[in-house]
Length: 223
Image (cartoon, rainbow, N blue to C red):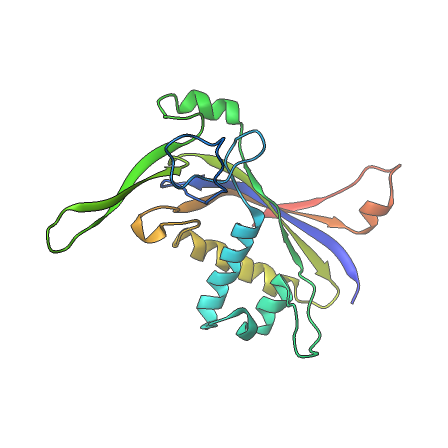
């Protein structure tokens, strides 16, 4: 198979409820937070590409009734990759998912002036003793507030095997399913509801990567 183009799917991810994707805890982090969110080196929250890609794959797997990566449908393995095992040849992923960075952090600070921290809020959680009705084991959890916007980009490698439209339809389905599900932790408790906005596709033929002295042309359309 020959690579014929790269398809860039980009847009915004809007957090409709508080978003918690866990990061590493260190002694230099915010004092008192038991579960913090993942951040860049500049301390700005983001959605890791691995989290987004894994969730999109799991949406399609649940649609097909797949219980593990090993039993995924062939089209899922073709899109997302397959490591292969027991001397079985694997499949290189056709889909690259970049980290979704927060859109305009400075504007975010202007819109969210009353947060405890620069980009996040805190929420206390606990468990309830069913016999006594009292709260136990309180913990403080950090999350990105509802209304935060992240910019995402998916890059799909198109080959000359006529599977592109099928795969793009599957990705579109996965994104719609994810809007009805959640990303990150504590989804069953209301966290992680998102929606995709202003999604566009741009196709760049491989020949465009070979020339540097000519204007590059792109074909764009709504996804």
